[in-house]
Length: 384
Image: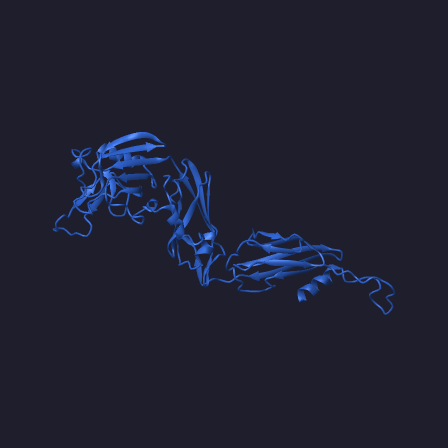
């Protein structure tokens, strides 16, 4: 009421001829100037970042509303009558905002200015890692977007709503929450090759839980390269590599000897995850002296699972490559072809293996394509 009264006084619309003195005759009553109301109220502190800024005008129409802090302007929209303006995006925590408004009416113009400050959250939510995120990296058509936060997310729907994936060649996809700090985006079908995908986390001001708000946005541009797909058959002992549908390499291989489950190569859609030259491989769960213990140093190794599977150079098994499976579960190749594979592939390329009775688990490394998309999207906080 104090703000409205002050605005009316300074607008020049409240004084009219004949309003003073005892004899007003038949003079028409004065037309009041527009009354502007701003919420949050002036000088309010500890305003929640998810609170909406609302500006209204009585006895007139709003002409202009700006909400600014540090040179940044908050977006908003007017209603159909131009008597109400509402902000459309969250506010930034720990920030002082200035609201300015102009209105016009029969009683003359009016202006109003107000300031308020948003609260400092007990927990500030941020993105601490996005994979892929290596500068200048080109990735494969199977690459997911893996996002990790610095704090647990309780309101997963609110945070997921703030995650945007904008592809030059769009394809349907969905997020799946792995735990309270980890969420992964996977497409229904492989990414179309040769494009850029922009991921943006519009986290600023988003309420992620009690006393937890996003404190800054995060953006990453991902470059999708050619469609590299390798088809491996443990029965024919062959690996055929295609780039954009064209065969570019045919390799004789040796897969897991399958004397135990541990030594059986997993069937399914694998993604290339990382590479190393050399890599030291040690038998899992065994120590030196145990039956079946091994420690091998291998060259040009490309990881395809977290259970120890690589495509790598194996000069010791060249005689078996193309005719028998003798490895501990990896895909053995000749030194020259293993180096070629190592040099040409990217993270997120497809390695599809068939022929064994051991299936790759969806959460073994980046085995996400093992889960049907209909089930994958059930892990979204937004999917019904």
